[in-house]
Image (cartoon, rainbow, N blue to C red; front, side, top):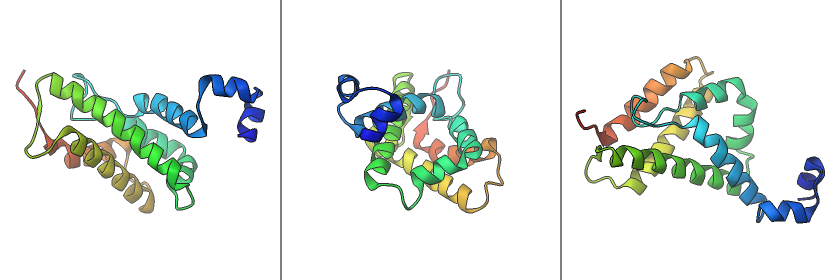
Length: 155
């Protein structure tokens, strides 16, 4: 905590006016970033567009290693997973509200968890294999994994 308030050049009281803990700070910042990294919407093909995330990981691989590496704190990884699942759930809910449906027997919470698990597995595979594929190719792989979860309605 001392490092955070010193680096931000604020007092502890100011920090606690905005956040309840370091975990809360991490969660808020990850939510903000995930909105730009994991996108959905009627103008986006497929269930979820993670192309910006793949581009970011390619541009800042050290950050990914710090966040997802073996030395990362379990609590931080769990917060990252929770935030990504929240974002996936939001995008999924938008699709379902627009008339799409999940393939039986999937439920939205299960689908959100599976989406994030697939994304994490692909990111790990990509990193382990030298990140030779483009962000677009990784998005196509991701879509082939998660796309079949949803049944698109005809326009």
